[in-house]
Length: 238
Image (cartoon, rainbow, N blue to C red):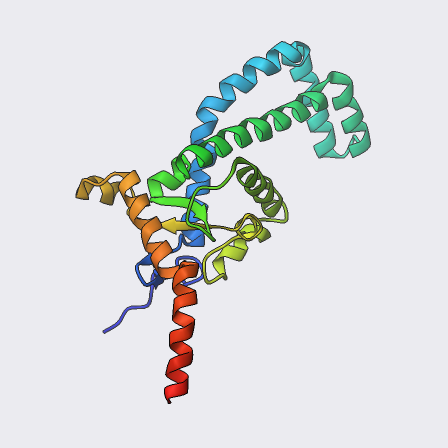
């Protein structure tokens, strides 16, 4: 007797292997991205609060907090218009503070993620899941410019309700919009628990995964040129 799957295929798809190569699924990458939001925040939030308090000390007073509570209450009850609410937030300096915090978050996260990609071809979330990023055309690491391009495209792909990221759920190689623009693929190997059980390091898994990808998808030009005359001679003999 066969039981129906616990989750539908579009939420938790079955593993699809392309020979020895497994591309990271959309669900797995979403979980890794969630971890990448939480883990760096442990470092980012204290640093951000320090600079915010130095630049906008007036926004941390009790009087400002009371005024914000009054404005939010008035907006919720319909006593204030949205235009008046924003004007008061600007007067108190809170809009400037929010803009700085979002700018700091984007720059700090971008610097950290691009550095991790460049140094290790992975992030904490991807590392735990056993995933890593390589060049789709060469199987090697990318240049710093292409990592920056990939980060910018990741942010843009996430803006329209994650539509650009969701492209990976329907692509044969699980490439999102950012992967297609930067020409990258995300490969999946053993996660942290399997690596600990087998006594293998992430670096060993990455090396093996990259080798399998290159052997299965990237045929050297010399081999292609040598195969062409053989195919022509076989056709003539037939």
